[in-house]
Image (cartoon, rainbow, N blue to C red; front, side):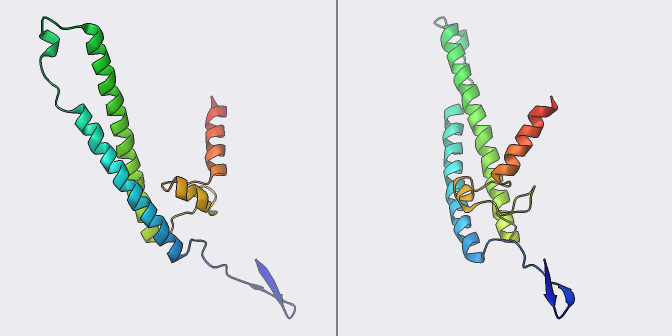
Length: 142
């Protein structure tokens, strides 16, 4: 941005683009709460997986259709566990960005990620527009 002063052009430095410390504190509370929820969900998924290494499949009453349902349930819980682990890691990374005061800045455009998006998806690193353009460009490459 340029500003004219007495027929001379002088560069005016822009203040750093970031959320205020108060806003960052608010986001940090949201992230910590969601991180605890994700960790609790992870515990539930791990309990559901359990240590079921028994010998039920050698029992004379073994029924393959029930075993198939059990395997499917284990796979589903394993997938949910993996997603929770990724979500927890994303929350940890968001907390690091808050400490570095870079939280809420789109990694693609450098613009603010809207506050409403950060409240709904506090681990977001991109504005919706950047996320959509990334998704679109990935699909058009095929």
